[in-house]
Structures are given as C-alpha cells and as structure tokens.
Length: 253
Image 1 (cartoon, rainbow, N blue to C red):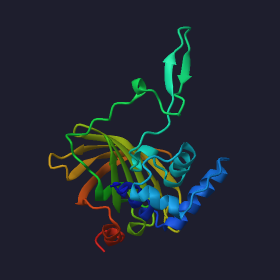
Image 2: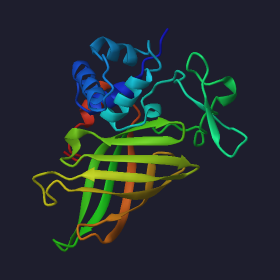
Image 3: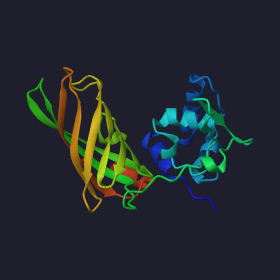
Image 4: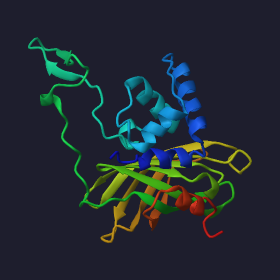
C-alpha cells in the first residue's frame, strides 16, 4: 500500500492552493523555464497519495520553482534520475549515467544523518525581536510556521494567515545546533512597504526538542548589519489540513 506524501500536501495547503491550482502553477513554472509539462489534478493526486514516489526531472524542477523548496524536502522517496561524476584520469571529470537514467549502484548516496533521531516536522511558533531605527523602538515579529524535515535539513514556511509578511527559513541540524538562512517579505501596506529582507540564523535546540533559541543577523533598512534574538517554540506535530487551518491565524489571536 502506498504511503501518502504528507509533506507535499502540507506545502500545497500552506500555499492555499487546491490541487487544480497547484497543477496549473506547475505547468506555468515549466512554461516560464522553457520546459513545458502536462501537470494536472490527477498527477498531483498521484504525488500526494504516494502512488508516484519520484517525479520526472521536468516536474521536479517545476515543483522546486513553485514551492521554493528543494525536491528532497517535498516528501518524495523514490530514486531520482541522476548522473555519476568521476575523474577522467586527465585532470577533468566525466559524467556517467546508466541506460535507464538511474545512477549506477556505486553512486548511490548515503542517507543524511538524523539529529538524535528526532523529527522536528510540525507547526511551530516563530518569534523574533528587532529594533527599528526609523521608529526608535523595539518590535516583535511572530508567525506560525510549518516545519518539514528531510534528513538533517529543515524547511520552514509561515502560514499565510499568521502574518502579512511571509517568512521562510532553510536550516541544517548538526547535533543540537540549527544553522541556516531566513527571508521575510514585508507587507506592502506596512512600514517597510513590501521590502524583502534576508540574513543568517543560528539556533540551539533544547534537550526536549521542543524549543530552539538563538540569534539572527541581517541587513537593516539603511544597509547596516543588525542582529537580535529568535526562537521557535513547538506547537503541534501534525501537518494535516485541520491542524494547519487551526493555526492559520495571528499568534495570540
């Protein structure tokens, strides 16, 4: 029996797209890239039900474009067509593929290590503090975010109803340390007028695995480097439709 791809479904729901909408977005992404595809609702259903465990490269590239996430973070478990790179003995490298497009067994990648075998997927509360020089005051930014884990990598996306400023993070777990990058697109009608900000972040994971605390660093409005505290607090391990709907609101609302 096929295992449902809950990660892909959670990402689609986080984008507030129906299966038809998602298929259309995948087709549009392929057209923009000059690699047309025939994505439709039935194909999305096959992906999410787990019947199809590895999309063809043309679909994988379109999926990454639509979701902003690497294909490895979208819950697909099958082997993707890959290439094997080897030294050619003359200071260069050769690319080898098998006849069916699958890399030879010797090129099989080892699975990424899990951090203490924990799974951090679920809904978390993201909270950070920053100082606004223009308003001469400190503020707190809060989002409910969906965390999806693949190996030791975490992808984080805010639920659209939790804030007018969409937030994304890409983190890598090494023991009890999470390190990565963040991006926030501010609200078009807010103080920062839709400006996009990004930077780096490092968090320490508490032994319970239910709270991460640390610091962010990034450029400010005047292109000065700023920093401040950031924390992620676990809320719910589920990423099903009902759970995401329950948290698709302003924190403390």
